[in-house]
Image (tube, rainbow, N blue to C red):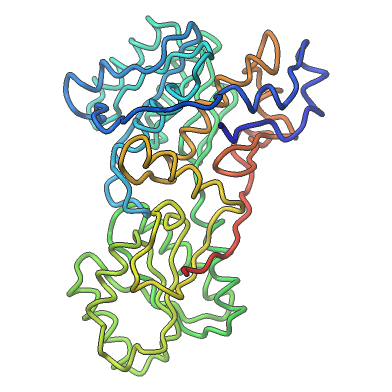
Length: 377
């Protein structure tokens, strides 16, 4: 069953006529025996990607997919495309067609995607993770009154652009607060060099000082570089209390293996990130580690659904893309004739999906998410 539902009807009543009960909205996706999607075209695969389409309904949703190499869950790089297709396939009986197009450095590819969306008459666009590309798509679609929800922190309601990004700083607040609560004094923050890894590492580093923690960056681009960097810290007399991995769990376990048998790291704490909640069973080397994650069990539930359908691990953005496709399908059933009106999209009551409770604030950006601490069993 879909986990997606409005949190409340409170603000919709004055805006839309004929609001449908939340229970109906929650049931839109229904129960579906989704088949294997492992053969789905990945963004950037030449002729395969521009032909990407899932579902057969009259309401058309456009998705600008993107590759996520170096993501924080060790997930499939094409997870956003797969998640969008999975959502459309799961929404059996709901009038939705999802067109998946790829984003790349090639401006022509984005132009073709916009042209395809115009031709198909899409009613909402989801993606990308590029502020520049999201703005270009939103400007083109706003002329037709079509909203764009990007996976960035940029929003502009003048062009109907909403931002649904995960904000590294929000997660870092929860992580640093927990580290301080546990009495840590010094952290090694490991970055692989990939953009999501660097963003989280920078946020942790910037907040640690204010919390009275000594945080140092360790280069984790390779296992040997990580080992050398961590060893250099303890050799310099840094009282290392924990290692924070801004990486996927498999990469973290690989790096930790280089420290095995070194008594200097025997009691050092291991800290992960929210991407780990999507990775399924974590490596034994991470037992006892803790990590931040969005409140609720939605990530794990989505990951199980995604793996069952595709045989792959998803990413954080994939979970959000799935929820947004279901949102695009659900609102017309729940909110009447103008389901994507800004007043509805920015309703104080918000929405709930696999990614937990979320709402678009008055400016169109998803309001701060709530993070909790999980422990690897």
